Length: 508
Image (cartoon, rainbow, N blue to C red; front, side, top):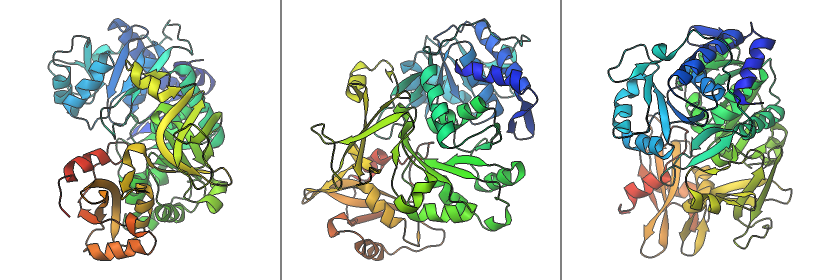
């Protein structure tokens, strides 16, 4: 089995079922598969061969699925690109991945032009928009009339994706996955989330992100679900889509849930079709999670706590476990083993902090063209995640920080997630991020970057007093910075290294 074959199978099995809705367009599984095959033959005509790298710098759309599955059917390797990156950052990914063909939305034409300037490996740059752009081909030119299945022998062991890490600590690295690994991601999440062909899924997070792509789009296609695609996240449009299409399952990062909760008159929308909700990619404050449960009228929330290199995969907190373990990350995902170890490699005891490591069928093969980084990350079949975690007496794991984000103040370890959980309880704060800044006396000091709710006037000393009610003195932010918006990547993850760079020279 390979990823492209799952679509072809459903085109034969359920040809007339709606596969995707995008804007006012709908595709049955038969039509979607025929469109994919037309483009697959076009890629072959463009010179794309098995193992070649094909990049997608596109927002969510029907064509995103068409392009992705065409890449799978010709045995090429998909390289999803964050559409919010600069031309320099895009150029790095295209060069590092040895991309030969890149698909892009019209609005990114200038970025692609600058990113590919001087790159001799790029054979074609193809716009998926309606315009004819000078120097680029259009997808309509590449499409053929051949709707048959491409005669390419794609095996499970063939590479399928290079997923670039979000770069929260520096330059992104390309995690390589074959069809076998990605299909196991789909299998695992389908079983655990009780996904079934009757589900209608909603895609609001970007499809270039491993969670939305592998956990949901590929799983939904594998099962034969109907999938509703939003070009980009808009809170009110999300509510309208849920009401119109009777969405039963969707995934969102904590920031998205936060914005959904800010929508005025949100009670007017019929959200009763929602049966299950996934969240992850960043820590979810308990206070925010409880409000989200009330909004959707269900406690069937899944905390999907993993990382790109895991497929994504790692640990999961099931709905039945939320009542007793609310705020925890969970236990190992299906078909996955997880440990939390000390620096000496021993399993930690409850109350201690160690590094979470995982192994299983979904873990990446390695980092593309980075053998040294691969050796550091993959040791004796275990993936060393760089995530610091605790484990309780019942075996539930809770992430507390990234190794590089842990703050050491006066010899004491401060975990930013713990401080952020308290800040999110403050009634006047919309968002918060905690970082360490250099300090002559303490080595590092705890600093908080906060975004006030609309119209709120913040009293920084009052915020510190609020924190002291729940945190030891050394954990309370010594300095508070107000931002209009916290820098994040398109996956919703806070770019703490950027905050540190911006604020390291700031005075308290």
